[in-house]
Amino acid sequence: MTVAYHLAVCLLLCLVQTTLPAFAGPGGGYDLMAPLVVYLGVYRVPKQAIPVLLVGGLTMDGLSGGVFGIHLTSYLWLYIGVRWAIQFLHVDNVVLLTLLVTIGIAFESLVMAFCAVVVSSAPWPVEAVFPIVSRQVFWGALTGPILMVGFIRGHAAVLRAGNALFSEKDSLRSP
Image (cartoon, rainbow, N blue to C red; front, side, top):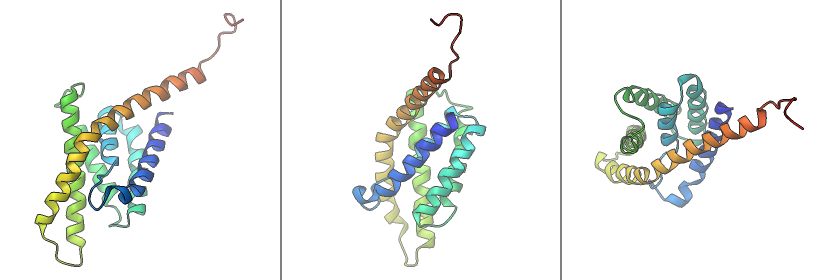
């Protein structure tokens, strides 16, 4: 049930991510999967997180039209980095969790920007990357923690609904 919830959230984020650029403008939106990857790295074991990362990475690679494999690779590296970082951080601290989400979004934005610089057919100055990445990190720092809270509360609601749905009735106590 947990993996199904995360896969549904992943596909919803992929859908929003691919339709959002029309509203966000060029370079305005950040990769919405980055907060989900940070959430999975903090709160989910690899057995639950890896299938979601694979589906999300392959879906975003297929839909983005960019270099195939860049999303999947960056999601896996971000997940590994978050799993490593939580050994040293108290994940119950809201400030550290916000900082971790912001760093994850910055990592994702830098990977995508430098990939775009490398594969560009025309020369593109590296200085042009800074305003785009800083705008993405700013919006990610504002909205990323809100998404994290949504992921946490959504998962709790799915677990409550699953427990209520699959709880076995006691035949001696029920009228």
